[in-house]
Amino acid sequence: MANWLHLAEQVLDGHELTDEEALAILDCPDEELLLLLQGAYRIRSAYYGNKVKLNMIINAKSGLCPENCGYCSQSAVATAPVKTYKMVDKETLLRGGRSRI
Image 1 (cartoon, one colour):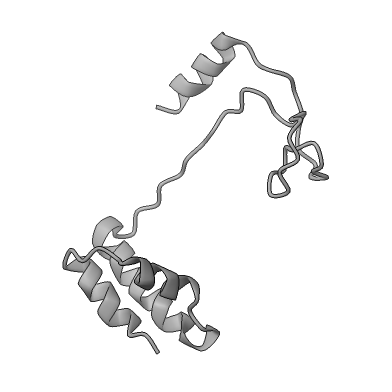
Image 2: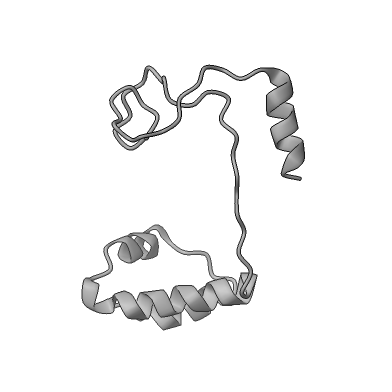
């Protein structure tokens, strides 16, 4: 059993995770998950408090992608109900970017 809370305190003290520690997090057993989440909460709280950051994107092209990436809702093999459109013009992209600043 890893000591997730101790690891979180080490991270807060400036410790950089080793490859082994990062892999241990990914392999965390279900019965230790709440302790891992508590450690992650401590780190997030220390760095970000209760702030939430939202990232918005404007797609230059939506759907209609010729690739077959199984994880992507816009790939050629996806069945997700996404709005599809061809490449938008430069002004639309710039306007979208400016409206989010």
